[in-house]
Length: 71
Image 1 (spheres, rainbow, N blue to C red):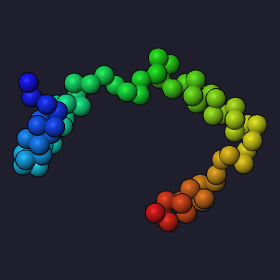
Image 2: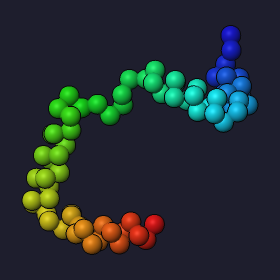
Image 3: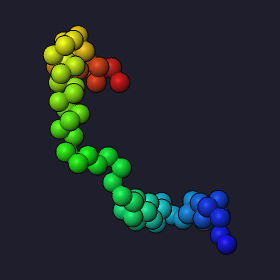
């Protein structure tokens, strides 16, 4: 029986484009990890309620721009 270590070594020996194709096939074979039955509505409502309770949790667009520019 082939082990995952052997499969990984063989995969890493492939050219980059073939590794990318293999990775896409493997990822496509998995169920979505971040699937919410309500499409994230509950999470959005929770975050909105938290922000209403404590506006300091948020940031302005200017602060966001500065944070992105600082990366």
